[in-house]
Length: 102
Image (cartoon, rainbow, N blue to C red; front, side):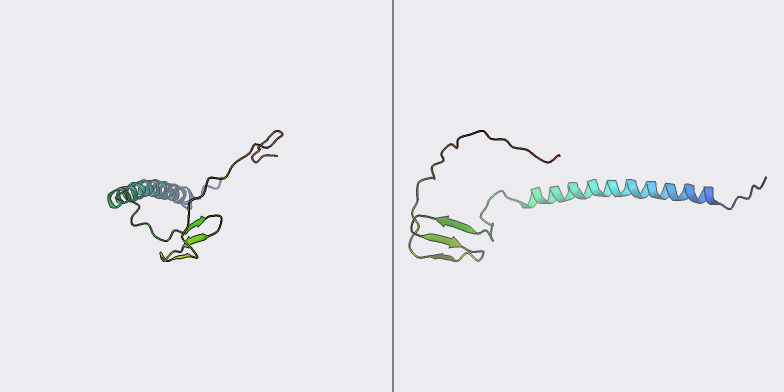
């Protein structure tokens, strides 16, 4: 019987140990990074919306439209007035909603 040992079993064992250590290290680093970013967000966010910029606001009335762009400039032909909420009427028939699947 030919019993030459060329080190494959030992190399495989070392590779498995290295892979296990990398996997554990990556998981620990991921948990620590997530916790650190969560802590940083909690410390730096004061809860107010005063610093929010870049939102586009569109208010439409029957006669005019007021749009505020990302720079904060407002464009309007006339002053916007409040309008009543749209009336929703019920549709006849039955409704059916599906998601995915075949």
